[in-house]
Length: 263
Ligand SMILES: [Mg+2]
Image (tube, rainbow, N blue to C red; front, side, top):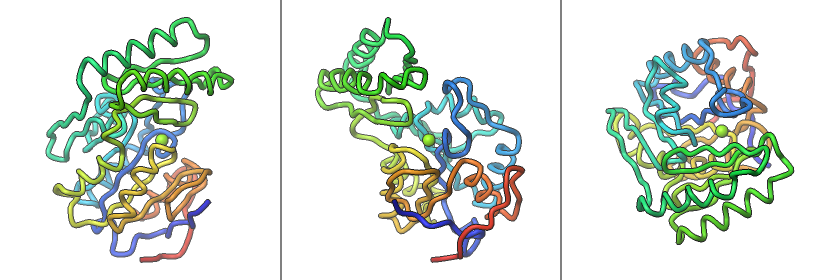
């Protein structure tokens, strides 16, 4: 376990930084299913303020599809990486997709669907490139789900990786992750030349933490668990309070009075 409390203000102000933000478990609490998640007006407002303060250098980096991200944050549209980096929309609006061959994507999808059909308590989420199996309603099935996805991964000949998450296992393209997405953003305007900062809560976010660490930035882990992030806050409420704090605002949940400024 690493990670000290982040400072209440950012040295040099938000305009020096590029902000990369995971969504579920970081900015919003987990819902029963991803489709039931909800972004409250306060969060929309704080992200709008952050976007302005950071000169547009704000990207949402999620396991969701970019389409699902847009629906969640409507009417706002941010630069976004979806499906753990397999798809990306730049700040200029260009779409990039890094999908394995269509036949492999289809084979993986069929394999997962065929296995999960008829297994109680599972929610299969077909995202187009990635396919996720949520077992939040059947936590006793954790090892069963992982085993099935490993078998489906083997059939795809190394094009996919099994990505664990909170109450979910997912097959994502092996060539992309949240770290590759952040590196791609950092090569482009308005992100390039800034200090990258990434907030995330889950195993998939460790790729992003590694990327920002390597780029001289800062990683902030939300919640418990081993991490390579240098900073940590205890929960979603604290992550939101910290974001408010660096913008000179106060969150309705809590006021952030965390650690001392550094670097
Ligand atoms: Mg998350």
